[in-house]
Length: 156
Image 1 (tube, one colour):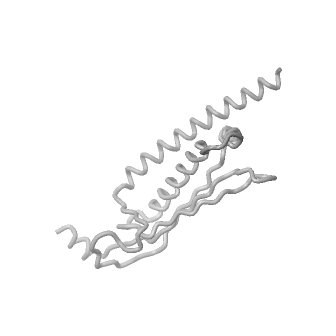
Image 2: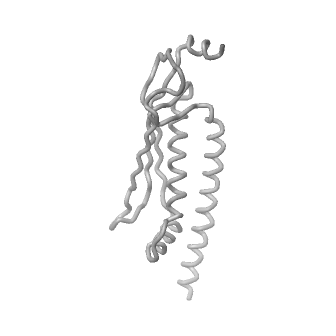
């Protein structure tokens, strides 16, 4: 009976602290997304709008590795028994993708646009078998910087 109480306690603690960490991370992501809203980002291969004076363009990237907590792993194992979407992993991937794009934007604060945005996702297995331990997301694209003449023309 004591072992069952310990297991239940650990599951509840995993849920509470995992949910708390996830909520904090989402809050941080939302604040930073508002801050970087003005930096246009697109998956198109050409800049948005009529841009003539590009003086610099370079590859930028942002990456993140987020661990799967035990509660999410437990929920996924239970869901695998009956089938259906793994909502616990969907939130993990959502946070990872959004964080990777934010880190990409933070790597080029003076850029005017980011074009050709691509996102790569991979899982890092933990130990034996195919249990997912972490998720890595890499976001990369081309940062475009306008010449000062272009900025004056656009302001007019």
